[in-house]
Length: 381
Image (cartoon, rainbow, N blue to C red):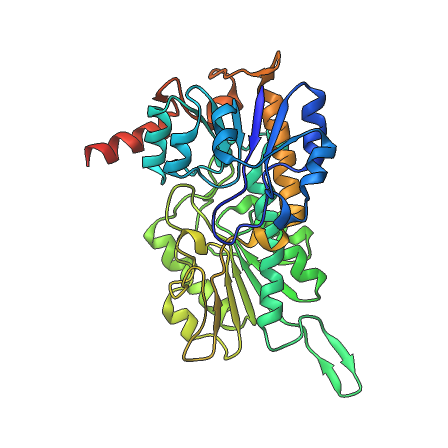
């Protein structure tokens, strides 16, 4: 089997999908690996490092795509990339198929098997393949660093000759992987941390990291069977907003992480809450790529409101820690590929739980039922 690793073309992307450490193990399993020249340079991986691991370095991406049985990358393929894929080949990427409907159609028409890394089931067996968890770990960590850099105060309590400086108060909205990493990082920096989540099961995890869990009476548990959060009722949203307004108003920094798969990020901080925050306080919106949890967030930008609140909507924070984020992504891909590898080729068994969950197109059809519904609905519209 020939596996190809292209250079990421998304502006600002510094990660690479596969690192040399993984290639060594793939080559040992008789997988031929080709890497586009300079694919890893923004993650400080040289072409010679890939050669030493057993990969072939290619100068022509078009030729590499044409020969590859499997392409592994980070971002969804463009329409131009899909056209270059060999018919019957396979591509693995963060596809986000519920929103990238036209690309899904193009992949099916090309008879390419598309595996969406963001759709890998969150099960015990699939933990080592969970790209969303590994990459949001990176964004949760770096989001806190952005908050600390933008806040005109110290994070930790300091006892100085000039008196005692109280610690910063940090509120984390959403206690998934990104939120938990944000809690842990903020605590390491010495802040007093509170966290809120609509899923009651995370309370123990929040408290184990030394943060206080914000309770909202009268709001049910919004956890889904897959561990994600679902939307709550309008009445519950009102109760939640009343509680959050108090906590947001007294916080120095707020980091938001709430996402709903395939949907716009829920608004947790409307404009009136921002107006109630202290001058100099900071919001880091880690949901900016899906519209943001803050109503005033401008994805990809940092703004300062009239009342002096800094709102950071930086996207693709994983690229800010590209070395470790690439390594984690690569390890996830290694586990996923090896899970499907049989006799030197990928075996697509749509009756197997992990494969069924993340394979979107196969044999010229959209085989994921949830994605197929969206594709059909948008086609009819």
